[in-house]
Length: 283
Image (spheres, rainbow, N blue to C red):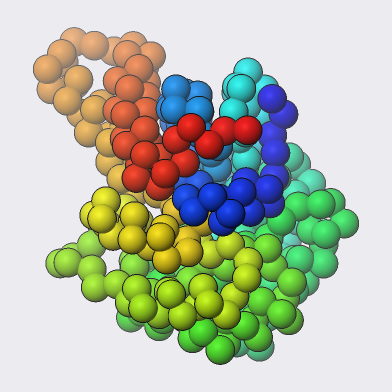
């Protein structure tokens, strides 16, 4: 089917008490693997690219690949800009086939974050495209954005932020981090519950790679409607390719590397979808 937006997807998840898995993709093989997993489990799915991935492959190329694969699928597929670094990039993605965008103004102060987020929302509404934004700072490094320490989302600020920007979903900071964790993450789940009580729009969890299944499930129960996975997909793909090279060093066909990479990513994605509870939720 044609690409869909994230609007109905996330509202359905909110009503149904599950989360949509959102998976960062880097190449055609990862696109195919994620959509194949969604097909097998009959799950709605979001595919995401970050600014650095777009710099590597271009907006037009990723939009074309994902649209072509989504057209063959029977499940809803959304193409999302993850951690959009500027208003200009968000608009470029919307004009070239992306059906959902995130603007990440978390590096700004509250007023700066509100200003850039509201500006993207204004442009997106003209195209019927939903917008995600982030309040607080998720730790770790995502592209060129790096937080030295976590600054968790304040519930009262979240209310103001949502009202003044008009965003469709909110990424919250509760102690997660981008990339793999050094030590055991300590999540402020009670803060998540407090935010859910006062914010009506769907909530998003970033930095899920490396969290236990139990932590992800608990966050979903507390109101998370979208969970982002990135680093562990890259590692699964790369590890599978490394294993093949080690076992069969004479292999030189890139398709062989792609096949083992796809298989590894597909199995990982299926497991994460089940943890999110979105399996069987395709409409």
